[in-house]
Length: 545
Ligand code: GLN
Image 1 (cartoon, rainbow, N blue to C red):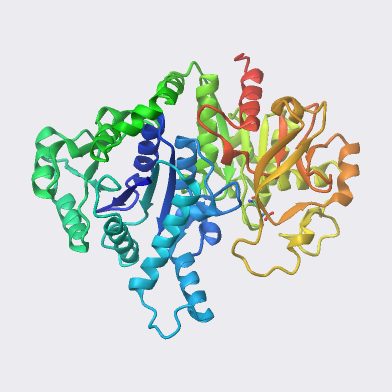
Image 2: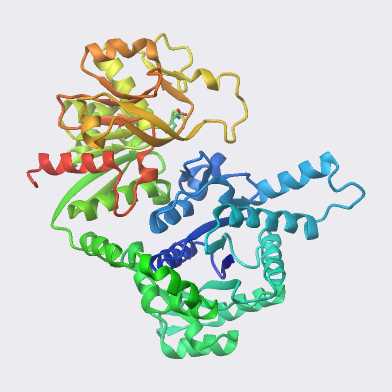
């Protein structure tokens, strides 16, 4: 039997509902249950791939190449899962299927409507995931806020799903996450916004079984009682989720609040728990990770040279990958976010990069800020500063070397200058002729072969690895030999050796780049190897090892 737990949000978006969902999944997994997660996104985009990071934070890439929003990163990191594109149900995908079915005549004779056709399509997709995954529990997070026009079909589908399951709390459970603000003047916790959003949910026909109150501090017992009374849930079903010093603490906070125990009790999961508990991983490893994370013994500073620095969410997975290294190496990693456009003068380069221990250059699109990134690479290469560059960062590092070492002043990527005589970065052949933007890049996990004896090989400790990709341009293989003759080694390539995946300069303390995105597969207790090697190189250079 599959059990569904549906997580909705009220009052405000950005409350951290994704972290609550991920944390609950972590707690259930720690008890030995198998879990998968679905995110329903009410936007009309088919996926997050075409969205500017300023809109919605970073675009996360799943193993199968699906482009999804950053909540999936948290699901994968907290629950240690590899999810797939079908786990993301967006309005765009749902409408597209319904319209295609209408055109093919599947609804012949019928007026096609939101209820039942759109809602049926949502429910069909939920069951598809549940059946394919075959897990004990399916967590379903509904993006957005109750009351939004866009979420209405998803809430209606959720209500119908519960009915379809016999209106049985054991099979379908609702958790509502809301904001409980504190009025600073009187320091009083206000429950009215929660009451209103629960009323809104009830008007749709959904009664929440648990209310998670997001607040700057723990809910007082009088606040819990009030929410219980006005929202018609037992007091033990009102759970505090106060602001935490770091997101990795949240599972432990919710464990202390009794969330998972309450869910288990109400969903009658004890018999299943008796079967599962001998293999239950528990929370010990997580606690150890947190202990290491929270008690660093040394400190380094890493500059992230990007173009969406005003919104930190744009680089979430980079930051998390470094957080995993922080715990692993007990090193506090101070991040210095630098807008690449600010690195266009010599004076600024020294001012902004002069005091950093390492430089991270993430991926990106478009020409804005490219010169600043090239300058950052040049500074790292010529001053022996450890540098890790990713995707666009990798491409920019190749351009820098071509310009300053190979002497091709006009070397460029054809993404930025399609007339250059030296397109050291060029459109992949498979990308020619593609003019649809959505989901058409080289996406998802692919194998990379490492050169024996290289730094990369030493870091991964194996010849064949798998990493996730998201790009249209690549190193022009015509230039490969020239680079290698000058000491810029391509130590990772695709199976057919045609596509450059990793470079390194062996003489440099750490000067590496990768065409793929190692940040997407970093997990709290398994930091991404390239990130870890980067941090270790910085530590070594600072004499910290
Ligand atoms: N814009 C580059 C490309 O399309 C890099 C992409 C990225 O950094 N994700 O190849």
